[in-house]
Image 1 (cartoon, rainbow, N blue to C red):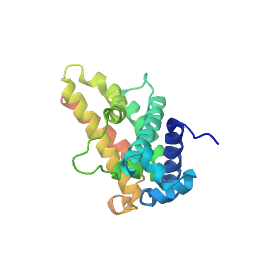
Image 2: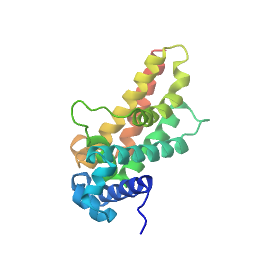
Image 3: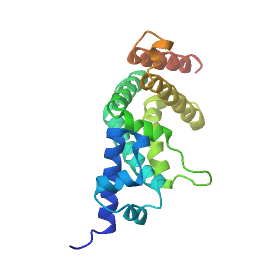
Image 4: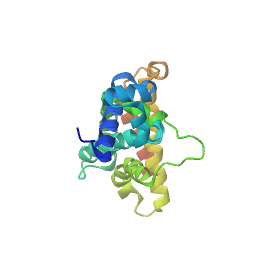
Length: 198
């Protein structure tokens, strides 16, 4: 039986790792479980990926791509900036609730000290902020691009915090409102502040 090309094997291992994370959670991803899921030898996984960190970066890159695609589809370019951001927030919440395990891997995985994320990954990560920047861009016509980028990251960080509370079952300790209501309040309040200081 001919050996599968390295590229095909790499894709199979990424898909297998993604299934493990989605079905069993990020901590369940081991070389042995990966090999069993991909139906290959444990040593083969290390021939394709230097270690599991490299594999997780690939899995997380796929998650980022899917999330950015969802955000791009969600934004109504004709709506007011705050309504565009609300649409992005709701799409983000919906994605995370559907893909809790993959989102957890995305947020919790850290490379060992001294290793950096590849450039292609950082480009994908930047896509999370690009749609927010585009949505609120009209409010920053007379301001610097640095201020626009900071505002987009503040909005995203607040959404990240709300989603983290939901997934850890801690939201009720903070507020009796649901996450959508809190997201709306956060977005409208923050953007009202931006408008007030124009």
